[in-house]
Image 1 (cartoon, rainbow, N blue to C red):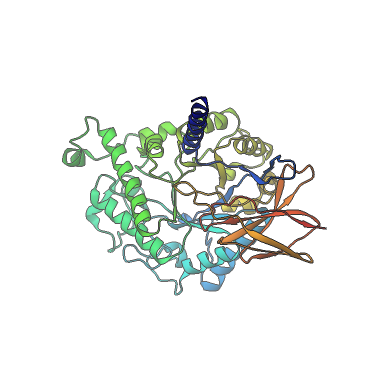
Image 2 (image 1 turned 120 degrees about the horizontal axis):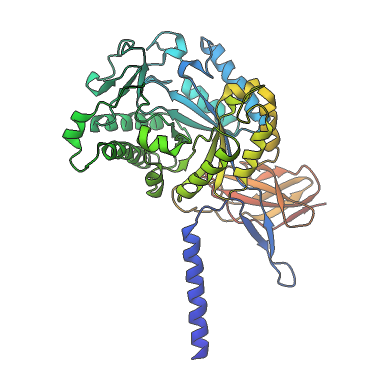
Length: 480
């Protein structure tokens, strides 16, 4: 009877351990037991924490791109120059604004070509620019996330705007003094934006779909949201119009995620709300906490464009309200300049913020606004980022379900400095054991099942899925 009780207790402990693991499926900085050496002691190897290292590239008003470059050759060269910089400093993901004002960087059945490409609204640039952007980015081993602004159509002054493109139904549009938007209160608008997303991710092999913080508009002083008629028509379930607005944004977020899952479920859906959570809730009318708790998007990237205590306290809020969504930090590096206030006069404040965020086990990446600031390198901010990224890392797993890990590679063999193996990964990571034997560094990755080792030492290999789920470590291979 005592033996039966011990077995039941052991089984209960196993179940409890499994359940606890299910509560926190995302574990950056994992450790792996690669082997059990003679004597029966398991050696645990700590691997580098995985991290997405991204840059926002804004096209609205040509902030980052194309910055006046006209024609296919000039625009391609401009983008390659950015990628050259990104490779040098360690950026591994581009968040490119393909839709800044209901105008797009690809041929669409819903919206016109962007004015920023040719200088003329709706004019075809004469080549498939987005195909080039995605292909060139992927060729460098960098991810491409398509960034869209959900509602903005145009900006203006005193209610005067450019002519509305005939592709955009005027009954879906709402005008304010300085901004024209798709009306967030209309179900037809949600349907239209979801259709635009579907078209985009169907035509192009983007890695992610990204939305910024422009939901309900921030209006001029003395102006208020004009949606009483829509509230009367659609808001009977709500006693407060503010809750109706937040529900409209929540429904849009849910609909976009469902569209992605039904169309290309491997596409990562990320949102970058303002760092000020009160503004999100009471001005933009997105309830970030509720959206994250319900898992309506995959990655949360708050714009924490501060330093010091404000940065720290707002990081803490997002940490507490990210739930099981993957959490990254958006840095406003455009603010760095000689003589700037609030800590932005020196790149030392970035180092402090980055180290604080990286120490947080839930933070799986960084995103920098904007790409032009990386080119300018004011007060050495780009140098500081490059220094922070000096260690090679893998992309994190950002899926919305638990990782489906491939089997560990097997049959490692050495022929001179060439290491080969067998396995079923989409790609492979090769790690070198550091002195002390408790930690490994990432030597490199390989698509084929072979790798030329750069130096003598002990190596391990892992297999990764297309979604970056990583296997356990292989057996060791010693290059002497």
